[in-house]
Every structure is written in C-alpha cells, then in structure tokens.
Amino acid sequence: MPSVSNPNLPLSIIRFSTISAYRAWRHEALLDGKTVGFVPTMGALHEGHISLVKRSLVANDLTVVSIFVNPAQFAPHEDLATYPRTLPRDMELLKDLKVDVADQTSGDRVKRRVAAVFAPTVVEMYPSGIVQNIAEQKGAFVEVKGFGHQMEGKSRPTFFRGVTTVVTKLFNVVQPTHAYFGQKDIQQALILKRLCRDLLFGYPEHQNVHIIPTERDSTDELALSSRNQYLTVDGRKVASILIEALKAAAKAWTESRSKAECIEEAYRTVERKEAKAKSDGLQVVIKLDYIEMNDAESFDVLEGEVQRDEEESRVVILSGALYIDKTRLIDNILLGNASHIIG
Ligand code: AMP
Image (spheres, helix red, strand yellow):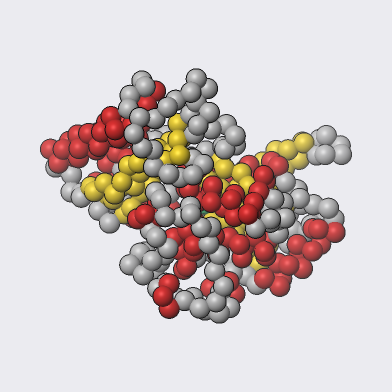
C-alpha cells in the first residue's frame, strides 16, 4: 500500500471506492504538507489520459486519478450503457507508469508513480440517486450559466451541467492542489476553470486547473479518445477527416481569409474525403455535426468580418464534431496566441 510519507515508491496503487477511506488518506497527506495532483477520467485509459497523469506526477508529491463513468453527463439516448469500462486494465496501465523527478531535498533522481485511484460507485457519488432525464432528476446540481449552450453544448444541452456537477463532487472529495484536463475537451476545461474561479474553490484554485495539449495518433493525427474503440476497421480509416478539415480551416485562417471561407474549406475537405471513402468502397457513414469558430473567452460564435491584431492575442476555438457511423468524435484547434490557456 502506498503511504503518504513515502510517495515515490509505492508497492502498488491504492484503490479507493469509498469517500470516507479516501478522505482519511487525504487528511494524512494534508498533515504531511504534500501537494496532490488530480486527473479525473471516465477510464478506458489511453495515452491522452497518460499525458495528463505524467504532468501531474512531475509537478506534485502525490497523484490521484479518478475513474468514474458519470451518468449525469450522458443524455438518455447516449452511450452510458456501452461506454467502455476496463478498470483492471486501467489499474495495470497506471501501475506501470513512472516518471523520473529530482528529489526536493537531496536532488537525487527518484521515480514517482501514481499514488491512488479513486473509483467510486454511482451510489457513492449520487446519494440522492441519478437518472439521465434531467426533468426527473432530484438533488443538488452545479451549472456554469452562459457557457454551456454553445459548441458542444448546442448538440449536447445537458452535458456540461453533468460535468460541472460531478467534477465539483470529485474536487470536494479529492481536494487537489492541482487538476489536469485535456485540450481535446476544450470547452469543458475552460468551463471547469471558470467553475473554480466563480465558486472560489480552494482545492484547486482556478489558476491551478491546467489544460494539456491533445495527444494524437502518430500516423494520422486522430485525437486519442476512449470512444475510438467503437470504430469499425473502415471507420478508423476515415476517422482523421475531422482533424484534416480543422487543419484546412486553420490554414485558411493563417492566410488571413474570412471566417466564412475558413469554414467553407473545412466543409469541402469533409466532402472530398467522404467521396474518396465511397470510391474506395469503405463501408462507413460519415456525418458532420458542426464545425464552428468561437471566441475562447465568451464562447460566442465569431460573426462577420473578424478583426485580427498583430499579436493574435484574441484566441479563437476552431472546433467540430463528426459522426463516423454512430460514433461521435470531437476535436479542436486553437487559433491565435493560446499560451496563457494551454500548458
Ligand atoms: P475522459 O475519460 O474522456 O472523460 O477524459 C478524461 C480527461 O482526459 C479529460 O480532461 C479529457 O479532456 C482528457 N483527454 C481525453 N482525450 C485526450 C487526448 N487525446 N489528449 C489529451 N487529453 C485527453
């Protein structure tokens, strides 16, 4: 069992399924003055999740990963029942993970590993119960008003309320010093930062909510995602269409073309790739949900002729969602100088 006093070499990762057991461990860490880095996930871990965990390992004494498939963020017609649940494999993956860091007192290189996994039951996380239909829900929920109805929120109107609710609960339990989220879900990460700021969270403080770049497949740049497991062989062959479309729009943007032309480029790319897939005889249905450009601060859709300053200090989220058969993939590129948002 990893102890708080010797976090660098735990024999195995401790797995907590109850809040009370986790809290006793966290209390000890607090008394020892240890920092806690936190990576919330829904499991089915891949290299995208691992990149977040590594960031936490480097910067914190103790790293906690949560694995919880959150019912509140799935609409009734979505894939809650079939979402991949692979806890034993996830535990193995985390157990084998280590990073080399300099010991703060001796300066020696030491190996740091994940200290704990918090994998609660639905009952533990939703003591008042939870149903997916929000009209029938009872109990406490958390909402960041004005930021959850654009982009992803347009297609998934109840999604962000589910996310902010569960992450509030997880932060209340885990009490992290730092928390790590992926750029792949950029709207989610920015909303969670705002949640911590507006509700004056101390664990973590909003400036300690970090957004980490999207990890991609090295061959075709498909954003890694647990949902990629749903893709058929033919579906996987065309799954990079979305990032290719976003890249075409981003290129047009850097050539100072109008927003309408950028979006047009993206749509044309999808059409071209779709036609190619058909002529190659691939058995796959491709359907674009949206491609849009939104202001990273307000999430407002960019309208009309967009003024661009020399430094490109206004950050624009170029994002999209695409169905490959029944699998919904999302991705984004940040335009402008996003160094204050990412990293
Ligand atoms: P999920 O398990 O899908 O809820 O994701 C848990 C966390 O991992 C979220 O903060 C995601 O944004 C992040 N994440 C998912 N995919 C990637 C990726 N390809 N690269 C970086 N972070 C990711």
